[in-house]
Image 1: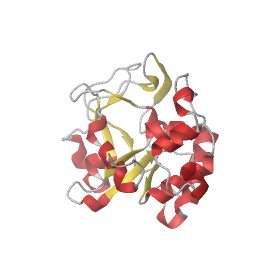
Image 2: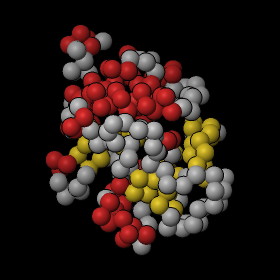
Image 3: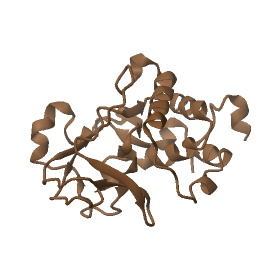
Image 4: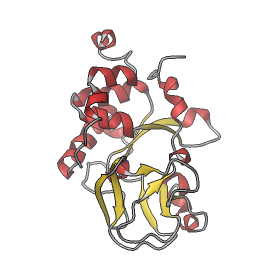
Length: 219
């Protein structure tokens, strides 16, 4: 790819997908990552943005954002998925992004992060990472977010109302000082052990913002 000859500064997400053969990589079952892999990703992120601008715990830790017991396993037709390993009562905080959610202010820092890995982990990140607004009222607050723990394995419910993992308006009051529903995800209903957690991606992802970072070519 021509863009990679210029240190990757002009590369889009499509260029990375093509260069790393992601369509083929993702057509096959992907591994459930172990802790050394998550630590590798967290270290690469911190190196890409600098410890002063890192949004994850530093020094990097093995801590996950999950507040309950979960199990990750392959889900037919959906790849990897997250399942409750215990009964979870409605309103319980299940996961917070305040532990291992990497945030990028610029497209350049995100490209550095991807380029530092140089393997098929890039393909995972290209389906996991998403633009998001830290403040819905401020267009300049958009960031690229990559959840560098098992939060990335939560599948989409595909339509609003079908999710069991999201914002509980009553439960969130206790966590208003910790980012509220922007940073915390709750059980929307009682969840039984063995049930898959499903989010509604539209709650937090703004996929039409990639152009703002120069990571999608203008249509």
